[in-house]
Length: 171
Length: 171
Image 1: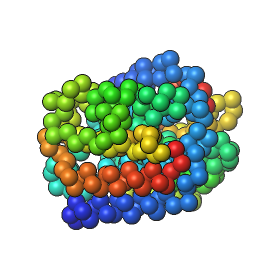
Image 2: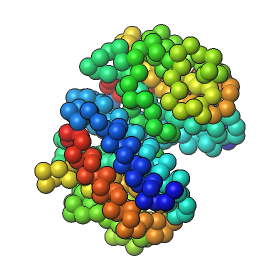
Image 3: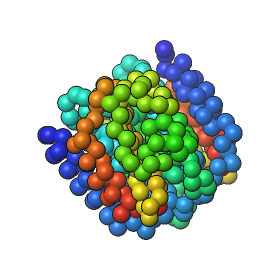
Image 4: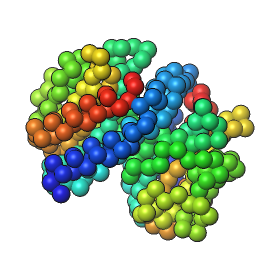
């Protein structure tokens, strides 16, 4: 399958996964997290069904804005190596996306000011903010062990996933 | 490294990971989940550093007892394929461990009555209940794509991890 087909499948599966679960609020119901646990798995296996560089994705998952500190991201469900549990808004690639509400498509993470190297194997990264009512409520974070792991096609599809997540989950 | 060494490392890393985080309650603070997201990653990479059958582990993660329904397990963080979001106590291998509070070491899942096949590739499974104040608060679930993927050594180490999780996290 092509990248476009794989992403279309991810969006279709994610839509089905979240159907009827929009009223589950994460503060009171862990099923909110189940959605994201499965979404991280969908992304991981989608990348690994594609040729390089997508197959070299080594981390896919989510950070949530901390309800008790709106300037901090908190590690959510993911697939990949153990990761930082808290990231301040503005810090590294994830913090930049959260702060600016703009997707960060980074060809070479070592050239990104303040990059946080949770896993030294990561060479490139894409981080898409999930924005609701003008606020960053979460981010989608995907790392790749190759340089230039992501392009416009990844950005467009992940931004669509971010919109789906913003619409289908009550943050 | 041997299985014993790898498990010792997992326990040491998990202890460090959870240090000082015991008062984070999952209902009000998502950092509770961060612990389990990273613990699922620790387990996954531990198995994949070992020879077969451990290297054939195809799912490692957690289910939590649903605070709003104490007879239901809810999908938590994991590594592996997309999984069932809710499992009733008593249903399948996970439900049996939750119901009986006894580890289920299953050499061949197809012979286990009522086995839930989230991933057809899974051939064997070990499920360890995390018990606090006499109640199952969560389970550790690990699947393997080979028959007889787990033995007493896995059971002993995972039961130690379950005790650590019960002690270091306020469910």
